[in-house]
Length: 266
Length: 154
Length: 69
Image (cartoon, rainbow over all chains, first blue to last red):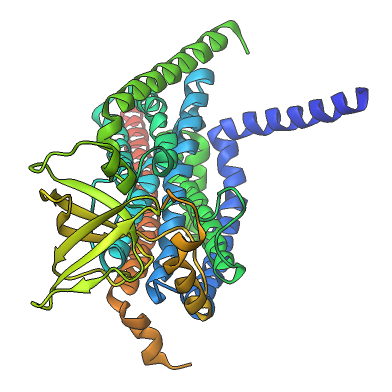
């Protein structure tokens, strides 16, 4: 019992320490120095291999033929549109409760990336629906709720940029992000709660994925790769925001001067 | 957590709960409108006006597709393996249209309960299968109503 | 492997390649935008540092002159 307690308290202690370290912009910058290129590399390798398998190796579908290969960009984009929202809402809550600078940075920098993936999910879905369903767009529950998600992302970005005062902007944006989180379960369950043109879940469903490994592997690789891409661009954006916000501080000035001297990109 | 943080935590939780409740009530209100289609069983059970447009979805019944003499008007039966609805449609059909395929037809009901459709969409399912198995899969789909008790979901 | 067959995508070439191409474009845009912004911020900060050091020097220079006279 004591051992278990000690185990959990040491994990909790570790999380707590990393949480506080990440909370400081300067510490974040140090950690992201290592994390950013690793995320970029993982994205390149996973997505590259996933795209190769998806386009060249995976067999055509029995009824949709080669058109189903859109799934390898459509589904990861759609998953990411929800995943990024959850990250953004969680970071917003942390920012509001603990008044943590970096949490707001993560939330704000996530919004445009999430919006981009939502846009991709909608447009690639439309390009898939046109030949297979016979329509570019229908107002069914899944498509409509995903479109609302795009507007929520845009609303959050608009609220942030509408305020001049940084603290007000951060808190208003975080509040909207938290309120908007209700859209996530609605999108996820929209194909179960109502009849829809969009089919049900293929991968996360009772009885396991309704897809052979030859198609599932590239799909999961692409999804994982896209997740690392999100992390990669999030780090790049967050670093930019930290530089911008801390431009008066000594460490940022030293850093910028030394990066000019060495000709380093970041 | 400090008392202030606890208070803020409570406020954030309340906001989420409030937003969730609001969304729940809003969805309750639009519930029927959020349905994309009705099934042949629902058509059979309910009263439908002949002036309003509806979407019905069902499997294209085996052996029911007939082309009329003009060559572009087709008549076929959609079924949920319990009840059937006859659909008449003039125009281009989606690539996936065939026996056993789930489709969505939008149109008005004629006096004899047939649907005169202005649009036919294919509604494919969540299963992806390599095309080597195409024959078997399509056979199984076309014969679905012979092997399964209705009403089936799609 | 037959390349023209591969690019034809069983007749769905337009849809498949538009979807993949658009995805590539959007990802590239997100990446490029972040990189350009980084260069811009750094340039701004460097300009600021230079401006301040110029102000510093000229302030010191005037002090000297006034001290000499």
